[in-house]
Amino acid sequence: MSKSWLKTIVAAACLSVGGCADGAKIVQQHDAGGVVIYPFKEGQGPMLSSFRQEALDLMKEKCGGGSSYGIVREGEAKGRTRVVSPLDGAQELVEERRWGIQFECK
Image 1 (tube, rainbow, N blue to C red):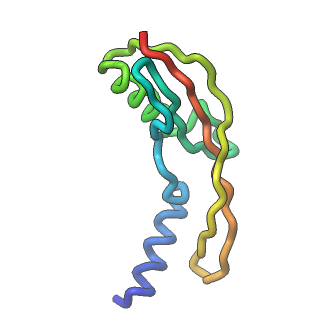
Image 2: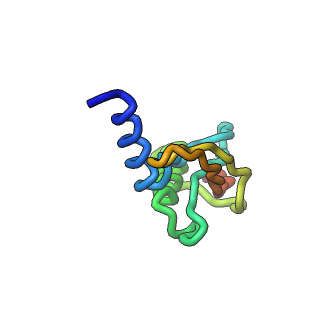
């Protein structure tokens, strides 16, 4: 199998599972909490995103493994735009939306 064909298959697989978006990650942290962000799809919304549970787990882990955290505020965070090349070779801009949660450990 040629490398270009393999790249095409990988790109198609990424697009079919949500664009190879990064999962949840802590973008700011301090001793008593931080901010975690995660991607979400337009039609699904941030509360039903498969990455929300991952974000909640990161907050638990940061706060000592238990559910000892409180959400200070949450809302849409700055997203990103990236270029993807579907199977037909044309490039397309995809805007990824992100949700942010500011939390404090209790």
